[in-house]
Length: 472
Image 1 (cartoon, rainbow, N blue to C red):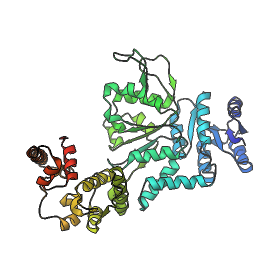
Image 2: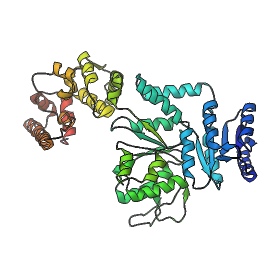
Image 3: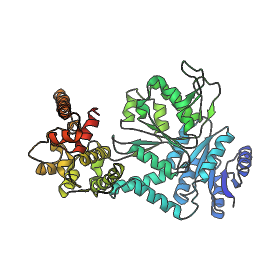
Image 4: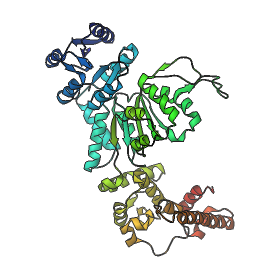
């Protein structure tokens, strides 16, 4: 059966163009010249897609988007805006519009939009339930905070609006971005993450847009840029606040025009990607300081999604810890042994503040697996900073291990004063570890089993230290 679309516009030429384009895609169209006719059509027919002009004789498209969100939340609606009128387009996206298309209409852009929108029509009643399960399985937690986040992700997955994902380092912003992609209409396309802070400023443009052979010294062949690699999918700009100002200008144009020009190229390439962005910095503050363009901020910051820190959902720590432990044992080939946490270890984790959030929890458990001598991980194996875990203090071993762990000191918060002392101490401890391990290995002619025994640690712990200290 053909899909059905409702098209609302008071210009006959636009109605004819839209009808011809959609009919060529095997879509049956019902047209309306004003909001009153559109409401009547909604009462008489079932639609899979709605296209509406922003300015109509008896109202505006923004009011109609509100009505559709309240009465027909599952119906994807795209708005048609005048060229350059991005403010209205952004307002429509915030109100729940699926996407927008600008006049004069580009047939290719229109077809891409329609094809993507039709993928959102549930093929069965089970599809929303399956998506809900996928979100719950990947974003673990039973607190109200995380349940609310999962609900927002599911809703945002139905839109093409740019989403700005905020949150502290280690909270899982990329995981959230992947979920939005995987649950949306672009899940068949590529999810391409970019760490904007990791690319040298002089290479950013060529990485984003690609380049042509001979564009510069060393360009011996054409290279596809990350935008083109994400065609039909999602581009995730992580640490977007670190983009150079000049690149911010070019990024803004690429987003607005949905086209890029490779370095050294003469022709523009049309692109069809959804933009998600994130940073642990305060992007609004970066705008005030002149380090981030205000126009790009409003283009990326259409919808903000905040990922809460782990300390705001402390009740989920035990569930997360158990899941991470299972994954790490499988990754390390330790499936045959059933690792568990002692009661004291779980109490210590629940009492800890986790300044590094979920990423720090993963590091703590990976380290504990290395140090544990049995399949039961104790509070001592976790090696949490004393001042941040009262439960840890109660179970703290009297004797310090023969080899100190630089990971422990590295994870401790640096005080406002005396930070140089902490850094010097970390350096000295690391150097002392290196010397002790090197001496033990030389004394045993690099017999790691014998060296571990002499140091009073397990063979697994020694292998961990060799890797951390680059002594392998």
